[in-house]
Amino acid sequence: MTRRDFSEDEHYYTQAFERDGVVSVWLELDKPDQEADVDALQSCCGVGYYNIDNQEANHLDARVSLDRLFADVSYSESFAPAAIDRAKELGIDSAYWLLVQFDFAYDPSKVSRPPTGELVFLGVFPYATCAA
Image (tube, rainbow, N blue to C red; front, side):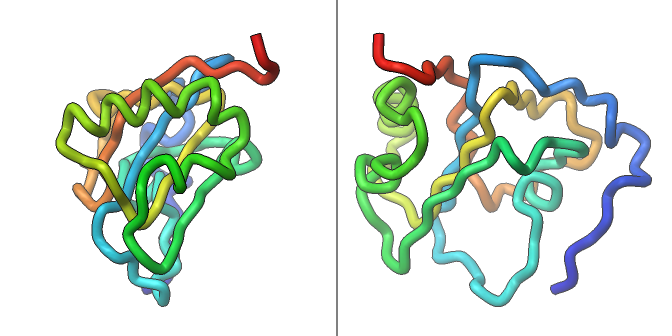
């Protein structure tokens, strides 16, 4: 699958998800297609513009515990407990893939292209860049 360019979409630059000090978190529960060249936020979540430099992901070849997925993500000690608690509320205790977008407050009600359902949005959580 070829990566689609969404930059001509009407709301590409106006979704206003940028917000300092928060991180948006998604999980993929099914084994991802390694051949697909897809921008997860744009293609799967309906997002327009975002700063790719503020994105981190962790994926493994097997479904693993959320603790393991969060372990190597920047600042995760400040937001992972709340995100994992949210996942548990949804009945999720493991995943193949974790995607985080820092300084980004995703709101699915603001997207013009509906989310595909491939990723589970856990929510927006505050994070800290240094230990308290």
